[in-house]
Length: 163
Image (cartoon, rainbow, N blue to C red; front, side, top):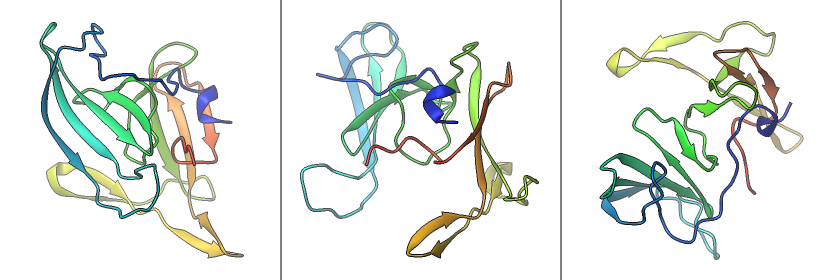
């Protein structure tokens, strides 16, 4: 299955940043954070997060950009517009029922991966890859499943890639 068969989100064209709630372009920019990957060329591969607030409806959100792709999220990492092209965990919307779709990882045999506690009481999993015939091969399986209706399944990639 492909991610785009599971989620409603799609890549978007953006002429200028706009509020994902009301469409206003009258926004407050509260600063940008970025990864620091060096590159040569026209397309910046760094993931950038810009915290914004709409002056019209007074709602805050994050505008994210990576490799020329733009998407918007809320404080809970729910995708509001566009579709992410980065590995962070996001909450998407089911193409069938509109419910929350989340990424889940399983061991190659279909069993649960071990978890451990990290700061803030969160749980983490160790995901590994190995090189086979010059290619990186996941040592885990990736699933996107709707919490409400169960639509979804195994996908080849952890997230939408536009490379």
